Amino acid sequence: MDMSKRAVTKPPADEKPVAATPATWWGSDAIAATLRVLDVPFVALVPGASYRGLHDSLVNFLGNERPQMLVCLHEEHTVAIAHGYYRVTERMMAAALHANVGLMHAVMSVFNAWCDRVPVLILGATGPVDAVKRRPWIDWIHTARDQGALVRDYTKWDDQPASAVAAQESLLRAALLANTAPRGPVYVCLDAGLQESRLDALPALPDVARFAPPAPARPAPELVLAAARLLDGAKRPVILAGRVSRSEAAWQARVALAEKLGARVLTSLKAPAAFPTDHPLHAAPPSTFLNPAGAETLRDADVILSLDWLDLAGTLKSAYGTGDATAKVIQVSVDLHSHRGWSMDYFGLPPVDCHLLAEPDIVVPLLLDALSRRTPASSPAKKDAAAPASMTGEPTVASLAAALNAALGDAPTSIIRTPLAWDGSFRHFRHPLDYLGHDGGAGVGSGPGMAVGAALALRGSGRIPVAILGDGDFLMGATALWTATHYRIPLLVVVANNRSYFNDELHQERVARERGRPIENRWIGQRLGEPDIDLAAMARAQGAPGFGPVTDAAALAPVFSAAIDAVRAGEVALVDVRVAGGYHGATDTGKAPGKK
Ligand SMILES: Cc1ncc(C[n+]2csc(CCOP(=O)(O)OP(=O)(O)O)c2C)c(N)n1
Ligand SMILES: [Mg+2]
Image (tube, rainbow, N blue to C red; front, top):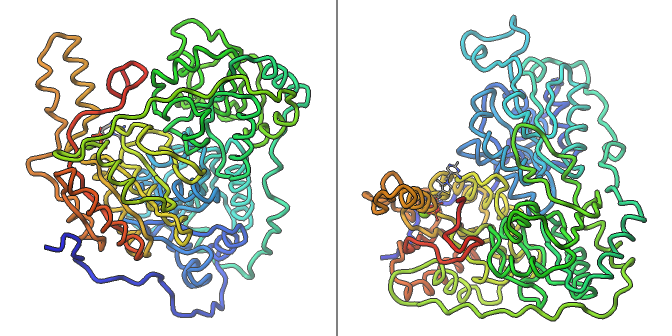
């Protein structure tokens, strides 16, 4: 049987409207034209009457080009796609969300983008605000006095402009704020009445260059010198390479800095690739929670340079216990500017001896110039080779990774996401696009949407986009795949399918153990079998070749090769790998991953 048999015929790649020659002007035309001058490439959306005016302008005024619409099957995917797209391109795109209910559906992905400091232009709608213009019933339930309140605590800014000209300024400000570090999503709510109001003429379009984000802030030279002096005097410096850009030049500068200092380097699985993991100075496999080798590296350090490391305080605590770090700490981050009261995505308060309030990409070259050291301090990190995975019997995440690596060979690949059970030793990252990090807010269901957005950005790059997702994560966001098949966005989705919300089985086991209750019951309310869900069929139903379930590690390699061939041919392919329950990676606590 051809497991990859398609269930539907190929849809059109683009949605080209018949030509329109607008003879009248509307409020939403001014808004759409502003999106174009702001160079917004795509608007991911689920339609709704509250923004039917803008929808018409995007199609009949702009011809569905620059920006192009991406129709989605759930609002949560729209913002996740924009999030994944930014992770590759560092370019903001938009999501359009229907009044009240559409925004409510999208809320988790807005939170994820906020936590990940990723700009997304979220266009919402309400009203008509003028009650006289409201249609009975539906316009009343889809009008909110303050819709922005739903997302105000995890957006950088929100607005509800009252005229077309005010809407233009609002969009300019939204783009400016979203793209100024620390970046984040912004929300502009467009009154349906304003969108549908007739204009005598289109207002002049703004010269966007005059409203561009300012040049990034640079730290005072004396602070750079102070940091360089600390590093010059260090015997065992460690660099924590955290949230940094996708720039290749910045990547090379970090390598040069580490080599000049002889500093050991740690990276995280929570953030995109920041340093070559096979470099002799890369000290421990990247992980989500600090692993024992990482903790030992930190305990041994006398100076720690944090390049916007996620949860510096928590990481230091994991290494040093409750006492403060004995090493001097240099923090390079602008994240202090994003602290809000609602969520704690700023993490614990780290002890810092020298704080450079600037982005790592700006500071690293300054430090390189300011350092006098020429002879490396630390010897290269000792690394134990990972034990080879067994390639027979029930697959594990380790054998999945080994077979996938073999099938990919040297093909340039972007790993868009790794599942919770991933161990950082499973695969090396050697380029800023080799790994794209997590979702910021740890919201299960973000994986498929972010994968589609990243794959959209990688289309035509020659890189193979691969998202390795947990089954729980895939199932919550599964319908995101259709947007990829519809717009012919090649993508490989591998599901590490343990048929469980397994992370939480471990939590139940921990609680039962502490309470002296039977750990055998940890699976109840967690397992996702009986009936087993046919994930490959869910892909096929959306026009994507689906492979599996693969139940024997020996069968993984040929299936991955076939799936990769399909992706090379422009398809979205899904491989369902039935992995054994249980995690294989060690963590900081030596126990299974997840919160204690
Ligand atoms: C929206 C949301 N709901 C619930 C959780 C709690 N949670 C964390 S991990 C997890 C299990 C995820 O299952 P899966 O993706 O299959 O990964 P596994 O743990 O099985 O490897 C859950 C439910 C969450 N983080 N986000
Ligand atoms: Mg699972």
